[in-house]
Length: 326
Ligand code: KG4
Ligand code: ZN
Image (cartoon, rainbow, N blue to C red):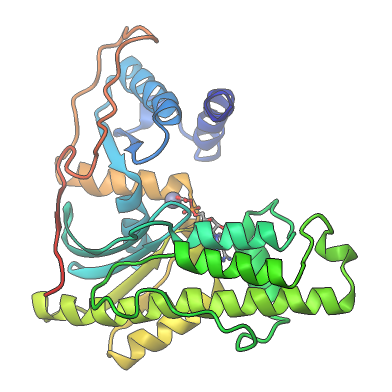
């Protein structure tokens, strides 16, 4: 179904983007396209379209890593943001702490050992019977404003691990048990809940959010220390990915960054959640450095074998190192 939805959307989306920019494909310098990580059936739809345009008009092609794009879009909104910088990337599928040393040179300081924070927001929203039309995150953020964040005592994940990794599976279980023990019925939408029921749900939302974000705060503090040892000139923490559009997340991380005398760079919400601008921008960054593939053949058949690398972190020009506790 996801593949079919992509196939249906791709032509009109590309046409609309070109016409709103007052351009035709002929005017382009190159074509940038996401090559991963993600569902390969969906990625393939985009890659096929990109190769098709690039082939027809003889344009170079730039393969883009989705998470790299979440980080680099910060350099579009803040043009004086130079390397090195630290990036916290928080989305539905990823929780990454990355030291970006230069374009294409990344050191991974931490990742999740199970779920990402966005997944925890989405499940919590579903179990609380919230409106998921705009995904779970915004619904939790809004309901949490009514709740008491100290009322439910969830424990902070991975306290005993002195590293920069994340874990959200245990917090998810704690939330599920809290919801079950209060007999909250997710079938009853929030709009029909009694005052008492609504306030219980709000307390869980607020308490979950406080601890989920506290986990980010603790890991960022340590990551800043690690990164400062490697790059003493470090000035910025970039926070991006869907969850970075959350105002509570932004304000708590802003305080962490201030305590460490750094500056927070957080793109506007529309550029934090998945968007095409970040892919185009990352394409521009690599293209300017001469990092692109030559135009594909003009008449490549639609069913041509297109190679989507299973692991794109080192493809095609990026290097990516992981480090453990120092
Ligand atoms: O980056 P993104 O748009 O897609 C992925 O690459 O996964 O992130 C989507 C995630 C979802 O889990 C969604 O619930 C979360 O970002 N999200 C939020 C907010 N807006 C989106 N989480 C918390 N608060 C928000 N305001
Ligand atoms: Zn994303």
